[in-house]
Image 1: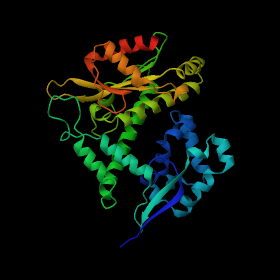
Image 2: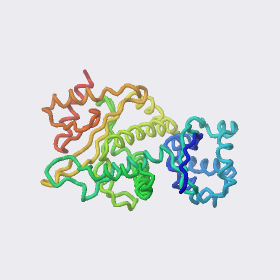
Image 3: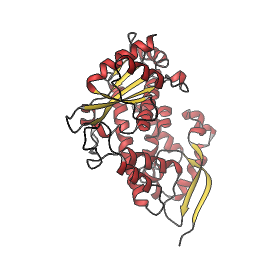
Image 4: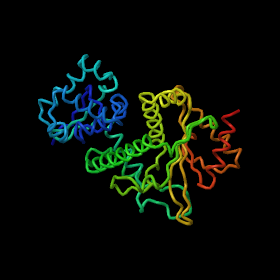
Amino acid sequence: MDCINIKFDEDINFHLLRHWSLYDSIYYTHDMIISFKLWSSRGLSQLKEFLADLGIPKREYEQYYRDMNIKYKLNIKKQILNKRLQDKYHYTTNTIILPTFLLTSGFTLKLSPQDIVYSVMSTLQTSSSSTTSTSSSIMIDLTQCFSLALSCLNYNQLEQYINGIELEKIYTKKKHYLIETLLQSDKNLTFNNTIPFILLKFDQNMFNSSIINDNIKSYEFFTHPYQTYLFARHALNILISYTSSSTNIIKRKKSKYLKNLPLILIAPYSLTNKEHELIEIVVGVPSFNNIMMNSFSTLFETADRRCGNVAKFVFFDHSVLLLQEQHRQKFIDALMFVLAK
């Protein structure tokens, strides 16, 4: 019987590193997207240059990390800590090197707390046709998802943990696609002098046109409040970084304006089986300059009272709510009034 060993280590904090190639892991890491400006061709070229400076051949960083030659894997952390590379690529080690604990048992896969969290959260977020409520309730029945998510924590059920990791890859690619689409076109964004926030709206067509063949319907993507909030926060950070680094003077000026605005995300949540009416999830994210001050719980409650209690506060955090599509504009108008006071 293998002995379970848990030890402290300073881990490389690239997204799902042990389950992806080194290149993909960096490419989908939020902090690295911003540091390298990976929405641009120059940023992608710089990423490949960075990997070359780490001394890793292309054939190595494009294969699964676990299959990489051990001599390259052992050298990565040392090279990342190299001050010359930090200055050249403008990153800080506190965003890449993460003090954590790793669990190993024999020669099996190493488990890190952050990967387990990703597996659990993605499993919780995934609703199948068998888990969708058959009543007219607007809530998705997550009972089965919760049971599966618990299994991700069981070391003797690694298969479920791996399934959760694969789901996280799908969601990560979908999030990346949505943000990339957002940067290419302003049609989903509204921000001007007439409204006191950035309004980001996703409709079902955005999901249906996705190039990723993952069979995730639009109303199965934003089913968990934490994941939805995290996506909104990442979208805001990347949007500000994108505009501030632009060579376009107008866009650069716009970034200063955006830093002072909160973001409201509205996206498909679920369909009621009775009438096939779209239910939307609404999330409030504080401005970039006030990241620690999220007062949207109070603001949303006040706006809801003003428009006749049309929202459903079904989550612990009231800065996330559910709304029937027909009430969207009424709620937005009420929120604008509350924020303008």
